[in-house]
Image 1: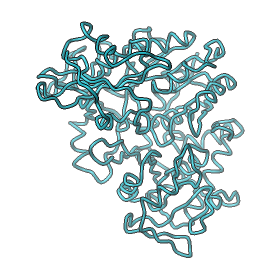
Image 2: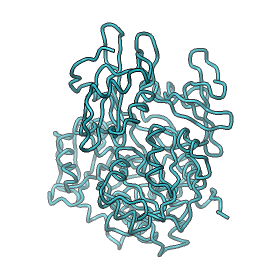
Image 3: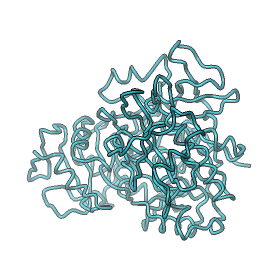
Length: 537
């Protein structure tokens, strides 16, 4: 029988989980990042060495440090090293350009910024930092000064020969180790910025309680244990990695990550390491996996669970491609500690593909009718709202935005969905993804779900664009399969007579590459692409 994971006084914080695992099983392998393999004890030792160096810089409990780097073992050293010494790590989106980076560095009040001189997938992190902090001045003692971010006092660079900055090699001095500071569940563990659309991103303050609560729920829902090997190719600055990593710490599961997703290499890891739980999470990655020439489900007999968030027909296609696994889906957001509900491997195929599972114990999710301020009946669509220990501690330096996000203790997600009689959550789209076509409300997800059933369509994204007659009409952006012959007219014809006339796209645009944030398509950027000819329906 599977042992249910629970919170104890030693493991009620992220730093406590790290210390506990090193004490109980020091030689146990815990994290694999490409070619770097670390045991529990090695991971703790490296983090404490970083913590000692941070203390030597004069940083005090509660200070913020920023991490602007690609996935690497050093990222985790910094993340946990800061946490163990009472500092608050700020995970910064590695896709940010100089303007966005400058805003976050200033807004988050980081006193030390970590970056890298290594160029990863054509991203020059160090150059981006210098562009963001164009008025940066350095001093002989290694400190920095910039009016752009007045609190920034140090900049530490991994793999850089520029002597003006602190060399990260100085942070891994095994002769110096910090003494871990006690942390409480209500303490802020880290800060993560939500992706902005038309406004600047907001810093979410995430407590130890929020992330550990969800990690325990995740580990129990999937019956994770020390025999499991968990593969997650997503970025470290995002909840889609930090929450699964925490769940692996709860369950003594080995966590596999990578600096950059490459399909061939990923398939090799899945096969050779006998991965049992895979977390591609998003259809752009999953489509590449099952569409690769080397993909063969029979080569992955150990794989038991695979998580993706996608339209129903897409999830069923993924399940068909890997029949020996249980395809599950999820619902959540950064402000709620990442994910608040996962499908269970015990659920039926319909429950696993048509819903996002049930909330974890201690977490409530309801659908709310914002038109008449009433709780929706089971099965009735409304705004999804969340209550429980998983909730964030507010947006940093944005009290008005925090107040607007909350209603009598419930987080207003801005998502539209339903909750069934037996508690299953079904996501129907963002309220901002709702189109208003000639007075009719249309969920973009509904149109996408249908278009995605076309055999030559890999992925579609629908946005509303201005229209003189209808105020707004759907525009479909489509990634087609390799060697596909489908045309824009074919897409429109595919929709005619199958979905309501006002839902049929008036514009169809084919794309080879999506504008991404961390893990999501940035739909607002699609509206800047040329739309081409308008179809009359």
